[in-house]
Length: 321
Image 1 (cartoon, one colour):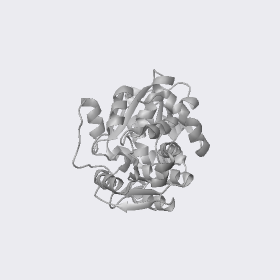
Image 2: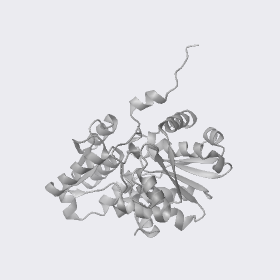
Image 3: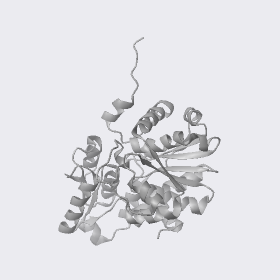
Image 4: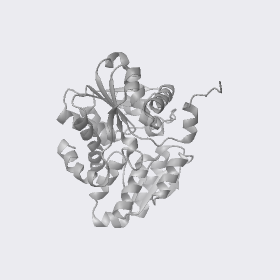
C-alpha cells in the first residue's frame, strides 16, 4: 500500500517537470458558498488537468525495456493527455484508446502531444476492454488510470501543495472518476492534517464508486447518465477503492444541473473555465453549504478541458438592453 513517504519521493520529480499550481480563495465564490472556500487550480497544469502529475512520475520510474516497448492507456482525455505529455518528455511511444464520440478538443490535444489515438466503444469501459486486448497483443505497458502506485503517488503531490498553502483545512473536496486524486489526497491529509475531512465527489448519474464505498460491496452499472466525462466510470478500480476505504471520510453525489451552475459561478467569479468534473467540488460545497458554514474548505478544480459545446450550455443569455 502507498504511504506519505511515496508521495514525498514523487514530489521533487514532479516539481522538476511541472509547476506548482495556485491554491486561492476567491471572495465572490466564498460569499456564494458561505465558507472560506479555496480552489486548487489544477486547470493551470500544462495539460489542463491534475493527472499529468501521475503520468510524469510513473514514466520517470519505468525501466528501459518498458520504455522501449511503449505504453498504452484508456482515457476520456485527461489521463491520456497526462501520458502523452510524459511520453514526450521521456521519448516513449504512446497509444491511447478513447470512446467513440469522445470530447473532440481533448482528442485533438492528445494528438498534438504526439499520441496515437484509437477510437472504440460508446464509453470509457467499452474503450478499456479494447485497450487491454491491444496491450496483451502488442506488448505495450498498460497504464491503468487508477491501479498504478506511482501514478497515485505523483497525483498526491497536488494535496501536499494544498497543505503548504493553507494552514488549516477543515474539509478537502476531491472529484472521483476512479479515485486516484482522492486517494493521494487522503494519504497526504492523514499524514499532515488528521483533522481534515476528505470528501469525494461523484455524479448522481455515475455513482458506482460512491455506492461501492458506502456499501462495502462492488457496485457496477451498465449505463451512465452524466455529461461530466471525468466522473463517468461504470465500476470502481480495486486499488483505489481499497485506499478510499482507508483514507476517505465521506462521499457526496451532485447532479449535472448543480455542476452546470457551479461551472457558471467559477467562470464569472474567478474567470477560470472548469471542465464539468473540475466544477463538481464547487457543486458539492454548495450542496453541503449548511454543514460547511464558516469552515475552511478547499475544492480541487481538477481540470479545465471543457468541451466548447458544454460551454455554450452554461453561458447565460445576454440581453441587448
